[in-house]
Image (cartoon, rainbow over all chains, first blue to last red; front, side, top):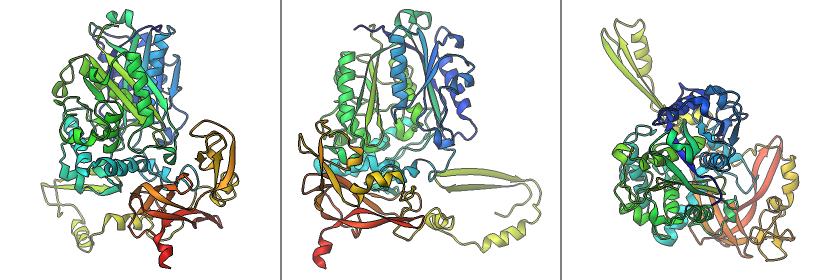
Length: 392
Length: 202
């Protein structure tokens, strides 16, 4: 490979939740401080040469022109180069990829990647739900976020016999993990019965099949791998990444049992990292809805197509299962502050690979962890990053 | 709650996807508490839906839905053929029908930019569907949305009307013109799907 290797030497986040008491700027500062504090040998903020900030939808709190011009000032680094990355739900993971490329290219030695999202300031009606009236005047009328994934659940159930209990088992597992993650929005376990009995949001998805709207921020510090030892004796490296796009509208999909963007991004990420799904110790995948995690684990090659529901019900994706998925609680329990989500997932991967995940720690066999987001109207884009403790 | 010396009260409010809890400690008798207690006795329980309706956040009747854009707007100029004429764009190179034409300058199958416009078939079958229960006013739940394979091979996604809750994968549907909205003094029409059986009954 012709790119300079990149190491992650710091990562951290703030407690996710309904953070009425914190501004966008305060959340950013909190996440940055957590990342700085996590650096084993100490880190001077002034060492940051450039920042990439992910914020997907500033309009949720009444601001759109934010990010590149807001974050440096908020974290005490006004003056540094800073660029906002918006790429739908994968905004955070794509900011990480772009930050990694800035280091890999040799342009910068030390880069901050930070994701910040305020989602609770406005009511649901004025926020994400308002998209029901967005887009094409006829063909997308009534298309809220669950509509982008529920048709896949309908079809997955039809083709593979996936049941609502199987979908529910994903939520139960992720809430179990979230109850062991002090940063998670939701801190309590739930049962299959709780999920089945929760109100219908968009058939066949019920309330507990859906992730919450959450405020949050997360940050990672990336450096050139050959200077990583200045910061830590336990660096985690960027092994590879993959990005892919797909047609954005639902009626343009040829399949409703898999997401093409994820499949293509996975091929690219595995090839770049030179690993296969069997080499991954744990993964943080995009579980905005329970069906999404089932599609993800199939599309990422962890289970055969059509087997995602059964594998979830059988515990294959639990903390002690064959391939632990969403050890942090995932979007379902930890929350989905869009721009922060991918960066927070990478923080969880970083903790897991360093053996610092506490009650959620998985067994490390290969030293590789995978992070995945998919989103945009009709899952039109997916981003995957693979981290490793293996020396490049 | 009837506050008294040294008493504690807890109030939990829930709604709009949020919950707030407050604990109140009364160290001495609260002036006017008895009057408030009398008012509360006269209260009546209400469903969440009723509260939303009272706030006008949920509108329980009416077929029309404001479009958020006036009908004479640019989007309706460039979309007139596909919304009222129900035209699709058939790719000259590979035959794929792209819908709607205004968002497909290039074919979703082969990337070609050569199309002929042609009327879509008005009969097809449901490939997959959902019933959306959660939308802001003035959308009215339940609202079924279906991905439909038309007889000519085109795939569209439309609202389903007159469905009586009978929708399933494989259901036969036909496309009918319906009023989507009545906004700023003008009606907005477009196609919706409805179960095919309804016409046979007539």
